Image 1 (tube, rainbow, N blue to C red):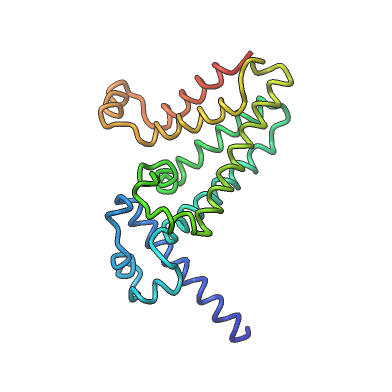
Image 2 (image 1 turned 120 degrees about the vertical axis):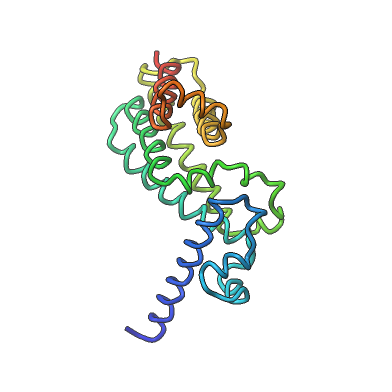
Length: 214
């Protein structure tokens, strides 16, 4: 291996280590409660070294979110390909979303967490982040997979003709947002009825499909 390739691999590994450390902290705390100093200490680097890899905290935050979004997008694409009809694809789309939320709860929480509200970020730093822009594009790509599945199912006559595919896909996203940010009172009520998080997610998905089916 050449020296240049070795250095590049070393840089990639260190960058991954930083993202891993940041993921742990951002998943445990709100964005404004995590400092670059704390991340540097977690990964065992100096703060100045951290800025060689990420220009600010917003960029690092969205590097974490980007990694999760890439995993999510890959899951959705792979799963939806297994379906033939629009309704089959929509069911698989929902299954992939639930699987992602179950297998990667940290990433799922970061994607739908209140810490993503713009007012908690420096807007200029956030929108200038390449990671942020890629997250937005991937998120839209995932949304369009859902929209296209609903539209296909509507054209095939398995989904109600009066359903707007974009509205329905956005409603599903809003449902996921609400699920992540559900209050403790709601969780306690579900638990008292013997309903765990996975059953609730499946039941919500089934209810959503029932609303759309012709």
